Image 1 (spheres, rainbow, N blue to C red):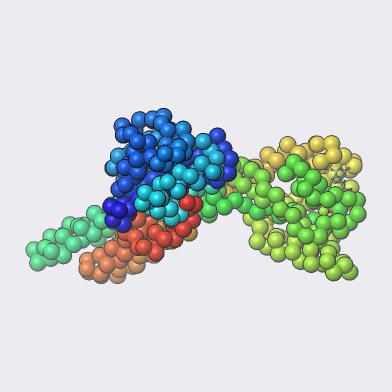
Image 2 (image 1 turned 90 degrees about the horizontal axis):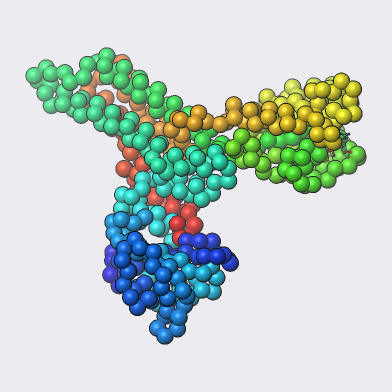
Length: 440
Ligand SMILES: Nc1nc2c(ncn2[C@@H]2O[C@H](COP(=O)(O)OP(=O)(O)O)[C@@H](O)[C@H]2O)c(=O)[nH]1
Ligand SMILES: [Mg+2]
């Protein structure tokens, strides 16, 4: 077998297992092309989709389409072959077996993309955005992931790093010529430049709240007294009879969750047991869970039956909650219930959805243009950079020498370098690619 680490020959299905019109199998590495040529008993012109029969010795496997990519012009940067065959799990298994008997091994999760990173085809932020794109469930998630795949966040980080490296080289030049009394960057200039940069770095780190919300979704808990119409609203929001609805108070006891796309974010609505003192042990556990869910929620919808109006119990509950959105229900039964919704008559529902949509956008949706941080690793890079910049600014303010300032600036630059993987460790790579599925 030829090929060293990162270029030995690996194979995996790139499509989900099961029955489909087409399944795609990828082979990457030193022997990828010779293996597919052996199976097809012919040669292939790079980048030309070629219809051919593949076989294993005398036994035919399938009628397939083969595309050969020659290094370095491939997803991984290695020789890479993509085979589209009929989407039968049996055929995929036959092909994998034939390829492995010719010396390829089954790829690890994310190994194709890891190779792309090692060969400089993608940086770490781009590799992460590929998993996010595969996982995208809403338009906003897909757009954000695509922006990071095309390098928006990486470019922002790299440009901040470049200005740091520039400042470092000027400070170091000043050190080299200290005796001659040259100054390559003035004190005030350095201070202003660092302050501007710090603001930019902090601002980018702060996009995490929104970026993270977009990627992981939000939780909205529906609270209220028994019979307020919570389960009815959940059923309306998710469009199915998910929760049991009865006129009996205390029907819902456990938490019920349903995820809906709202303002481009996946919002998981949680229906809860009505808040009340109760002698029923199970219901009491349910009420406890409702309060816990509210404590961890991104949004709280507090429902009040308009025919009863706001009671002292409601006031007490609302006072305990963080920014609840108060919604009156059963507008069809209540005289003067214009502001109330009615799931029965449909009135007020459009308005409610609009309000929730706005609320989600205002609290969590991003400014579409800003480079956005979407995970903890990326946030940590910007925060570590900000922290080092603060130390550097303190040194500048305290009149410290260039050699002291440069140490903090290097730390700041390295933190940004870890964002894209310009500076990275095996641990970081393992952590990132562990999230991938096999074949990516
Ligand atoms: N007329 C009318 N009845 C409603 C409306 N929403 C809920 N209800 C009724 O109020 C009762 C309690 O509803 P439910 O959703 O189970 O309340 P929960 O205890 O808060 O979950 C049920 O009989 C529902 O049919 C509404 O908009 N109009
Ligand atoms: Mg209920």
